[in-house]
Amino acid sequence: MARRKKIYEGKAKILYEGPEPGTIVQYFKDDATAFNAQKKATIEGKGVLNNRLSEFFMTGLNNIGVPTHFIRRLNMREQLCRSCEIIPLEIIVRNFAAGSLSKRLGVEEGAQLPRPIVEYCYKDDALGDPLVSEEHIAAFGWASQQDMDDIVHLALRVNDFLSGVMMAVGIKLVDFKIEIGRVYEGDFQRLVVADEISPDSCRLWDIETGAHLDKDVFRRDLGSLTDAYTEVARRLGVIPQTTGVSKPTLIN
Ligand code: TMP
Figure 1 (cartoon, helix red, strand yellow):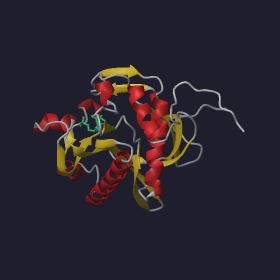
Figure 2 (cartoon, helix red, strand yellow):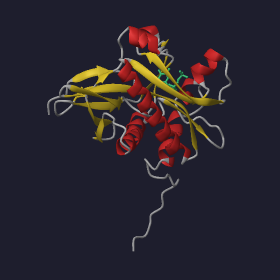
Figure 3 (cartoon, rainbow, N blue to C red):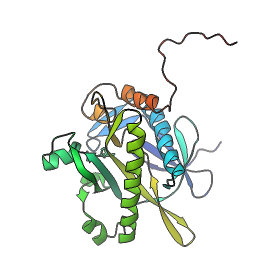
Figure 4 (spheres, protein in one colour):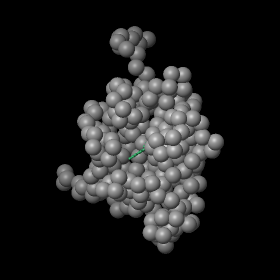
């Protein structure tokens, strides 16, 4: 079989040309980076877990009418997606203070915010993805006012969906990042949730213990990242419940 054409290689994923026009294949690597790739590691199994978890969240969003680029999972590490033009912004939604917001504003990590806060970072690794305002976005033409209205609406729907799904399995959705893509349909464009939704791009805290079940485990050296992501996948029923030592079972 002819090797597929690589379109782009990022820090955690590779994009290949898809089997049909207008599609791409998203391959999830085991690579983890933090602090703009100053810290790097290969974490066995991360790509497989994120492929499954992103499939789970994107399918749920599609099912409630929040459009995403996700079509279907192809195998352990790959998924078929609609190709789209990524808007060069990281859209961050925060429910509780943590990470860069806590640092920037001196708010204690874990403090509940009076309302969800939506922030934007300009996607540029060389600049370290700086925080930008809607003024910058409009002035530099990264997105129109109509796009911004749609983006906030999508981001808050994703927030409600993810918060609910997580709450049901004893996990608090502290914050997350999404990326938005433009899909062209004839003369029209539509915005869809693109990239991935996984514990790489969310902060997830166990409601009972406060344990971190997300990439902060790697960023802050808090233990095994695979164990944390496996726990999220297990609670969501994305991977079978682990029963420890598997015993042979009698089939009647
Ligand atoms: P922050 O507190 O470091 O700004 O991160 C906010 C959220 O965005 C958090 O859930 C982690 C996620 N995130 C990414 O997905 N990619 C990034 O490059 C960064 C810095 C954060």
